[in-house]
Length: 251
Length: 345
Image 1 (cartoon, each protein chain N blue to C red):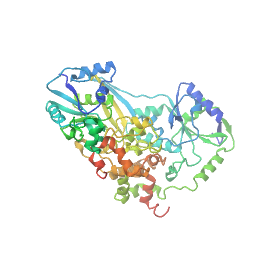
Image 2: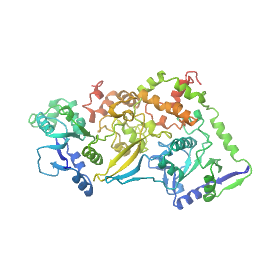
Image 3: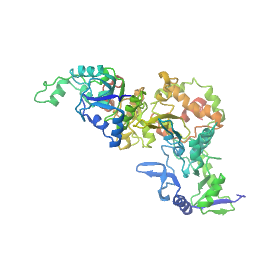
Image 4: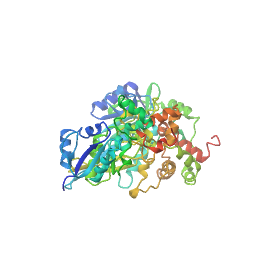
């Protein structure tokens, strides 16, 4: 069996997810390269290929010129994977969608705000068909490895579809709410081993919501713990701007 | 014990626990790790908390680990079952959790038995530590009579303030007690004072008025409005199941190594309150709404499994109540369905 051809691409992103993908021990890297053939990867190699079995897309879509490029990759790929929060949910790039275009253009390029064209930030699934996703900001390296194995073996990508609370409980954490902070964990997809709540933080929602989040209950909880409606909405803004359900009742 | 009563001094208790550790056996007890209070392995008896503070997880985790490799295989066809069990002592287990362990023992001994669970149980010694009062306002062990035990541990300690009175439940318990602990045999019933104080502390709390009839009542109330109202509140976060001492559902997954030449079969805790638990092949879901899953969960405790085990499978430890951000409680649901709540019972 020929090794599947794997390629990495980046759009609006910090490329941290790609770096996370190769944050492997040398022997793991050799195992990975025995299983797949990495044919394009700006972070590590300069070769190019015509077709891909698996294309991993990092970054969100923020310019019109991104669209034909992504569509072209889609047309040349058997399986296309949203790789990391920016591609999967729009990521923190989508924060700009809450502002006026002229304001953020001026903030980024004060001397020449119109030099670069830009559009509303979108997740890649809003532009092309996405076959699988690897969530997180950044992605979890071992989850990346697991999904590559799943795809190579022809299995369904094994991404948890339960809340971060599951992992917090497994880690026997004191609930973030009990510590007087707020947390999106109850409606956010686990798989990160509740990294932020387990280390003194709270869940920002970088992995997106579970399939059927009870957002009403989540909002009730946040209000019960003394958040105003605006403060609560701010909590959701960081990673969930493109999730229409989250902002359905909010400004 | 021929009408004789045994007691152990606090000093001798700690000496005995250190002997267990020095004997190379693993000792798990209530302890503090950073900000967390949990059951965990200790290396010295002075790490043990004698005063109970409710934990997130029950001691179930020692017999049914969160992730357990149950099989190893190679693509050449070699398959090896994996059963790991170490000699272990669990110290300071409370009556509610001992009820939980009893229920798990019955569940995992059924039909052919679960070799992984049973091997771990076989190699363990469980030392109970009785409660003299309710641990907090979220606990409701008294509702199902789980503050008292008749089985579930090898021997039980009752803190009388000065000493610990000992009740031995198993032969293994008697033998291990003699092996590690210096005890004193008394002719008078030193448990009396403890029992009286405990009975007084629990006297204002009673069981569900229709405790024995709960299965029937729940069976007849599948369409009660409480399922909808409580289900609508539910986050489906799964916390209640994760922390439950009697929930034992698991998922099994095969994981290949990255070299794709070998792999492991892993079983992991699963939770019936999660939407993903209820999804079956073809993407169908027989318990699509939170209310359906909540009804299933609570019926497992007070109906389906209660019939099977002959006692409530909710042990009233209160962990799910503490963990629930939206105040869903098996106690409140049962009281609503039995009508106790509205009648001020």
